[in-house]
View 1: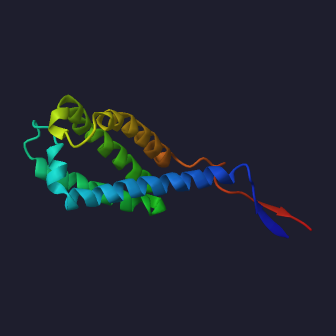
View 2: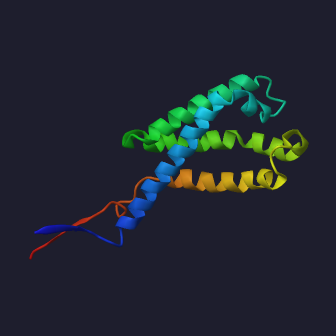
View 3: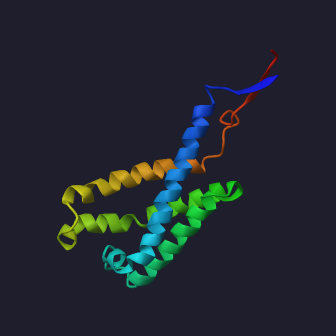
Length: 146
């Protein structure tokens, strides 16, 4: 007897694994960036937030915790939901950059414009990672007799 993966189902599982890896890397690298480049990150915090350093460091901690939570299957859904909320919470920084592009002259304006659509795509991927697994998405084992 030999077991085979159902070819029609397995690619969806691989795509989900790739999505988890992508979201992990996005937030792991980003979280490290909050500590390695704190001053640069503080520049994009909107001025109405009176504690930019703390906002950057706290969001960096949550990015790293969320990334780590993605690696353990029992915490993956909660981590993804947290990262989704965190991503929404940093939206004012993207809007601020669009409202005051002269403060970010080192960033091309087209890149500032792309930040929001990229964030929407990231939210969609995070939502997919957070979605409960469909019973049909796991690889199935089919026994065949030879």
